[in-house]
Length: 231
Image: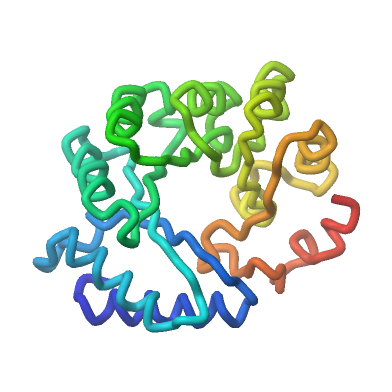
């Protein structure tokens, strides 16, 4: 996806798939800098994706631009600037993605302080490959929601913070099995987190990796609807 047309077409096909999955609003997150290897400027990447999404009027959509943990600081600052320029014009915020274990959230405090200063909303991947401390950092930075966050269940203190601030966790059950974070439904903490009063939404994570949809038309028994009967 290194040309305007390929990006537009991919976004268009994604929008059609989401509508078929009964989605009425989507926030599509990706890193625009990954799509500049053949000469596109980042703002062209963003516009191509928005054009593809908006070609399906049944779906309301925005973009979340991802900073990457392995990027040098200058590139992540560029993501913040791109988000600021397009905020409320198709972009609704930023995220931090990548190898959480190798680059924990504590390394990115200054970047999120900059985003906060510029009035850019943000979500943060946390509490998946790293411990609950990554969730504590995300809460401290001011994340409005947290991607994954399942390892919050390992700390009563972290869970209390999530409850007090009503910060939702975007829990991706199938992905957690695919990455071997948990090996059985009994191990997975989603039910406990819900019972504690933490806001939880069930998500698909990367649909192309886990081969699953938001409607849970799943590929395996672990991610079939009966797994969530008691959630």
